[in-house]
Image 1 (spheres, rainbow, N blue to C red):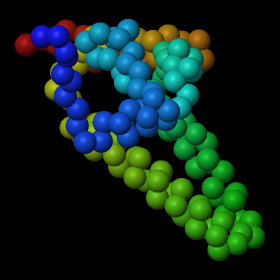
Image 2 (cartoon, helix red, strand yellow):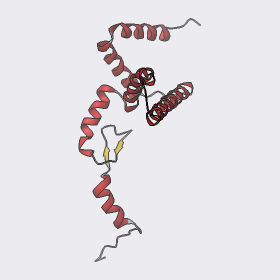
Image 3 (cartoon, helix red, strand yellow):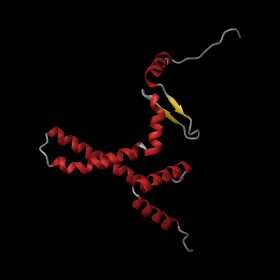
Image 4 (cartoon, rainbow, N blue to C red):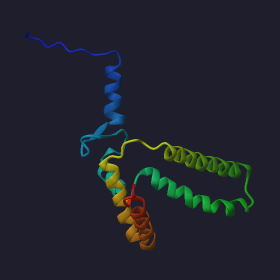
Length: 154
């Protein structure tokens, strides 16, 4: 009883130094039923990252907007004199854009079965953003939602 025995595993000392120096895992419990774990070197920016996600949208939506804009520029780039390496970069980008579209489409074709309140809240936040950014598209979206959710006669 006088001494406490601790159990360790083979790589514990090596991992302890690695985790404390490089990884610094942090769990954000603000969403207690769906905690977010952060692994990285810039964990001091977690609150900034979360704020951007709450205000702007997911990383996926941010990246999709960037892909859309770059895709608009591709025809102009292709009309220029480019090196083989530059043409390969464009081809790689186009492949990435195609794969992102295909992944998104396949998900939409087989959406998750349960819609949770967090997803509804995210959708409502995006609608509010749309209302400020593009009132006409907002009105169209609301009209579409009303039409789609109207009581249907049986």
